Length: 346
Image (cartoon, rainbow, N blue to C red; front, side, top):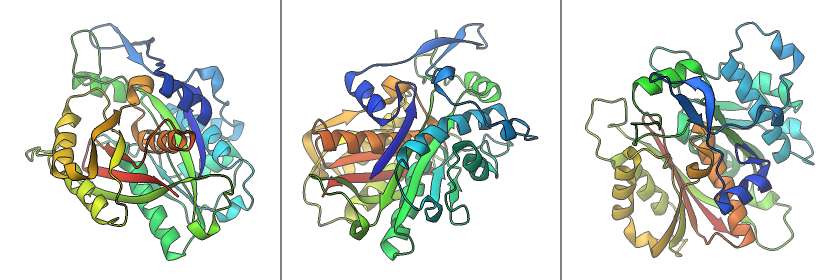
């Protein structure tokens, strides 16, 4: 598994992982003001740490500021994941992107992957590539399809990732009106963030690792929550609970109990209920003193980049020995999508 990351706490995988391990955060006030005329607190990648937008893309009609920002975030992370990899043109990319607000267009746009080729200079297999515009859990939906392709023999290598940013005035204004952004007088809110992460996955028989143990994705499962944030259905937390149960049912051969959980918590109390339901219904699969990690405390809520970032953090931590496995990663989107994956050691 080859990794690439871009986050507010790290330019690259190693710096991001080290910063999160050390508990470093990059929350700071911005020049954007909320409805109370107070500056938004956000977690952003310093602008001078991002590559400039390619000149041809600057002239693209209809390219939004958010799309341009996502391209600038994604390109260096993708380049890091594919550094030194031969035959990039034969590898497809499956990428999670933001979900749309009601009545709004897809934030990434239908040309995002073509534009990413231009921005990154990496000509991956566009025809077999795919976007998953499902928000916070999107990376796990992409991972599920990637594993299916690898297991069927359809692909020998697949790039899985996610990219997102909350640096968008309309989006911030909408979330502010909903009272969801952490601010003075708003305790049950989150810090908007951004980021990108990509993982190059290979079929087990194609792995070239020859040193020590390597982490692998043992299984992934996805599901839906009918009572999501923007639904009128009652919120019971069944979606994540069923997803985690399905995940464990698919890997009866993995007998070890989960020792570490990377959670989709972003600071809002909403997500605690469904994690509580999921944990209680599968309690026998967890160590009694299971370690809970919520890296959004360091880099805010990076939206659709969260799942790939946490998968990468779990893999790095397990390889270096400071994260004990098996390691569960779960994410929940604002809307229906739910996902969970288990990282194990070969």
